[in-house]
Length: 388
Ligand SMILES: Cc1ncc(COP(=O)(O)O)c(C=O)c1O
Image (cartoon, rainbow, N blue to C red; front, top):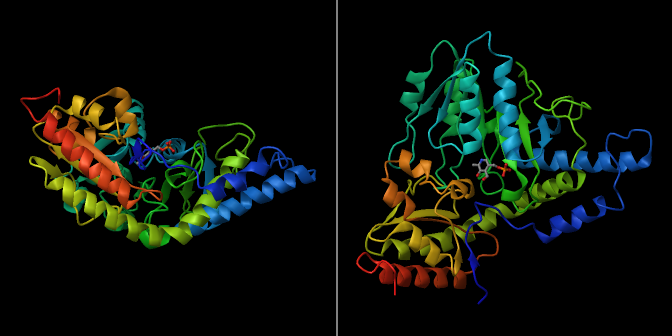
């Protein structure tokens, strides 16, 4: 057995070998700048970027011209939120989002608050769900945008974005979704969901890091989007800067592979996840965070009462690469804001494992994880906190 076993696929995924293979020639042989329209070096690069645009669009039911390449989802989120509200100031200044969004959304909202926008952070129930009635009641004449994630990165909870988007659309309000954890894992169709803008990321779907995309609906009425990075006018002026051709080619290939493979992956991973979850929930004091009815197939989030969180996680990390929340919150070492919003106290929020499975996860990995977590918990139950 090779340790540690990786069960943190929501933090990042390895590049699929076919993705790496597809990218390699674009570092050296096909190194052209896609904006160099005068010679074949540029044409080859440009063509590769356009193929990738089609592949990414194809995965989410969009048209290629609706895809803007960025340096990742964080940038796509910034572009969507800052870029869209800038042009809507005369219409209103009220924005709505969820308390359990990723920091890329929450911190951007805080910046917008400083610029004079009013932001309502909708609370969630203990299962991670947000009330659609509350959303309706929160909308006012000044509301210009609703931002709600598709799948939560910590619990895997799937929000009813189709219903939320319909509520927004009926009232002429823009709807943005952070779909980073959902795209390439479950079916996501922007037209069927009725959303206006969506952010996705390469490294969460077996593509490279540092590349992502924003879907921007093109059908009428059009969406005004102020560029946030100005310069050479790439991406139809919406995102300047020489395109990351190898990264974009990799993202495109990852999208193509995901489209073919996610239905089978999802079935396999749901089976493994269910086994892992069932066994871990039989540990005394363990409980599941987030509804089990509406969530991603490969994630579970379990708190363990009766052990001190930090030492427990340190022990677990000896053999298992797992986290207690998002990779970003592990930088700050704070209890997860998602779990706190779902009503967990800080102590329990810290004594939590987010287990996310991926393509390479085997049944043996799951068996070893079950045994190791169960034994570690047994040894570290309160009264024996050092676990010796
Ligand atoms: C839900 C969610 N949104 C946004 C991001 C940021 O994506 P990126 O790493 O591509 O900037 C992440 C990554 O952790 C995420 O999980």
